[in-house]
Image: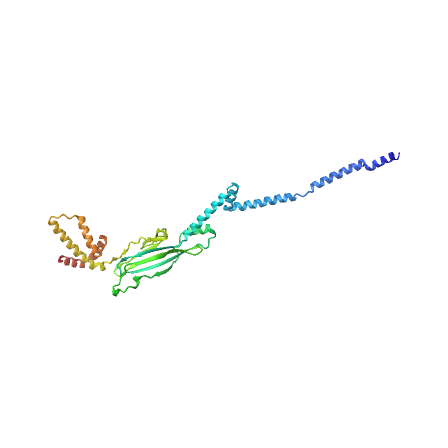
Amino acid sequence: METNDKTPRDVHELLLSEEEESGRTVIDDEEVYDTRTKRPFFTTPVIIIMVVALLTAIGLGVIYSDPILTEQFEALLAGELGEYKEQLRKAQEDRIREIENLTSNKYGSLTLFYSPRDAKVTITEKKFTMDCSHAKGETALLECLRGRMDYSQKPVERQVDNPSLHLDHEKKEIVESIPLNDIPIQEASEDRTIVYRYEYSILIEKEGYYPRTFYMTGDKDRPPLKDVETLFWTQRGPGIFAVDFRGADLMPKPETAKENYMAARKDVLCVQREIEKKRKEGKKISDSTVEGIYLEVLNRHGFKTFGEWNRIDEALNADKEWAAKFNKELKKHKCE
């Protein structure tokens, strides 16, 4: 019976009242509600995701702001990274090879020959500089080296010594020719960032003659120069450069050519008399043959062409008094 008395009490103790049970339920719901609403948004997973997204955005920004990185990234996505790296390697080799070619040292040789052989020859070396030391990287350096030389700059000049400057004219010394061997055309600094180009002005002169000036350069894009004959260095073989120099005969001034002119006129007169005699004898002599004989006579007296002869003839006959006197003397000339 004790068991029956204790059971309701024990059960009552274990069970909550309806009010208590109702109050307990409200509290539990509030606790659950509060827990859900008060949970922080920036949890560790969220922060990790945001950091990863931010770093990804920054990385993509860096990649797409650089053309090289963009190409690498796109090649990676396409599965062609190995091929892309091989193309980069070949491109770099091509750049290095072109830089070496643009900055290679070049030297040339030529021989000056001219007349009169006792003329004075002044050779002036002009050194121009292309400075690309400011370029950063192979691509920028190559772009700079491909540019044109600034010829508005004042070059460094020096005189090149040669035998014509030391002739003893009283002893009638002459120069057969002036060889110029391995003269610089282009040189570069050891790091290939500075290029030096050399050009040469050659003045050949003698009193009583019209001077001639030649200008030698390796740059075919060089702006033209006035009153000079420009000659270009051309490659004739591996490391062999030369210019097409065909000699320089100075044209005499009229007064200087007067003696030769008078002698030539006398010889031409004798040829004319001989041809006239042969034709009267019935021999046929063509005009082309006559012209060839005349030119041979003129050459013998220092006149290379009919044009040169005509120029001297016109200049001397401009002096009417002298021309009349000479023509009178010419009529009395007796041919041997």
